Length: 308
Length: 279
Image 1 (spheres, rainbow over the protein chains, first blue to last red):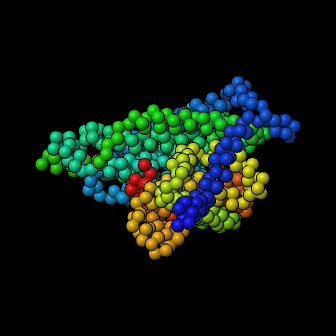
Image 2 (image 1 turned 90 degrees about the vertical axis):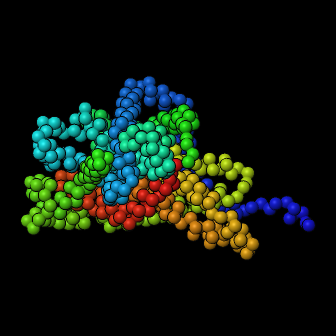
């Protein structure tokens, strides 16, 4: 037996299998992520990049011009998230609960139809709703008139007080399919024996949902919450498609994504600034990281899981 | 008897709620598509009426096809989506195989490293991505988009595919090894065909966000000849905002290919989601 055979050969094929994915992922995702964080510590002085430490963050939080925009965007983003949590996820859970009833006819038709908005692009969704809610076209006022509620109509997207909530609800309309599908899957995976045992004890219908099914699908609700959180805090497309980069009226629909885009690329009179853009991106990164950590360590690890 | 009656009432209520929500989900799409086939006057006079002999018109589509290069946009979107899916599936399944099949030092760390990207959105790194694409001259090419979407899709692909590859029987692979197949052949000939359903799931999951993305086309490839359909329709609608026929037709044209894909793949998509591929 030669020495060569005794020692395990280096398994090159593992490297070959891993290399492409790791290279692309590192070069296009991980490296730019850290390069962006690093860029937030620099600024441009006379066409040269100068290290300024945390100066950009001081500007973002200390300078009234920047901090006002930042807190406005963060506040709007929080409200955007709250609307999703309060409207999208409960509706999604309710639809899933109805769909998962045994022997419901046309269930797959309903499922596919309700999922349709989710596959459409933000551009389509944003413009379609803009047209429908527009006072010029008059579909929304006309329909409200038909049920005698015309006095309720207002040009929602044009009013500062309503625009953000309206857009949040449009986004809810678009994405209700995702919590619905995930909860539906979770509900289907509950074994029949458990439900039958409950039925024998006299727990059926709604009380079976509250007492048996809901506790069992809590982990899925947790996953949906964190998915909603991450998606909401890097949202951009819908606001941009419906209201443009200025997130009007008067920045009332500005969220972190649009704020970063405007800062990075500039608009109207303000020049684009990659370093302030990176600073905002770093702040977004911190917010998302905090959210994910709260979920992983605070919620997920404490949740009771049941093995079937 | 009262139970039977209550059951029927429940079923009735369930269908009522589902029909109501289905209508809410379908209504905007329906309104946009029917109005795209109407004359301008009819659009405003009776927005909810179906087009009839009197109000039927294709003027909007004519404007769109004359003014915007929608075939080019469609082709660009197709190239970007198919290209990204190809690389996500090829690289993703190779990495997933390495992680699922072999024990080596750093296996766990590598898995965690690749999983990092599931939770962190790639958009955070946009500033540096743009700089890098400018430096490498890839800006305003479809390759920039394909690279970004590949990187974005890989983490979840590796995660899902390695779960499935762990289920492929060891006996089969070992039989292959005894027959003298190389590790590469075992992967391409034996394992890949067996995880095809999982690959389809990954493909369908990635397809929709890539096709619909506005952020990266806007930033990395805004030039006319590399515009994707999503960006192209956004710009077109912005320019023709007062031409309602054109806007409605452009929206309908953008809806069409996605709906066609959805009709083809919806069973796969729904099966993928409900089989618990994402947990």
